[in-house]
Length: 63
Picture 1 (cartoon, rainbow, N blue to C red):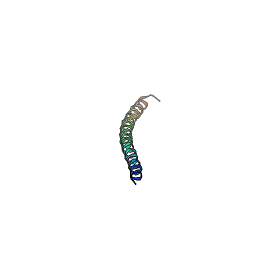
Picture 2 (cartoon, helix red, strand yellow):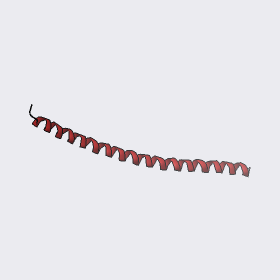
Picture 3 (cartoon, helix red, strand yellow):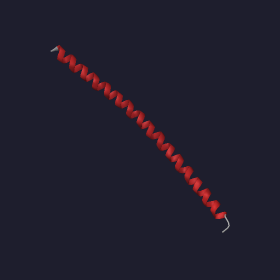
Picture 4 (cartoon, rainbow, N blue to C red):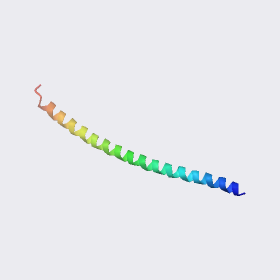
């Protein structure tokens, strides 16, 4: 009986360890997604600025 409880305890500990590892990975991935979304926003703004500047330059070119 004690062996059964010992085996069950080991399995529960493995599940707990897996949950902890997955929680940590999830947190890391959420941080990564946040960073990438911020970079995307910054690049989108920079592209809009570049587009505006190019359009202004094109308007100044003689035809």
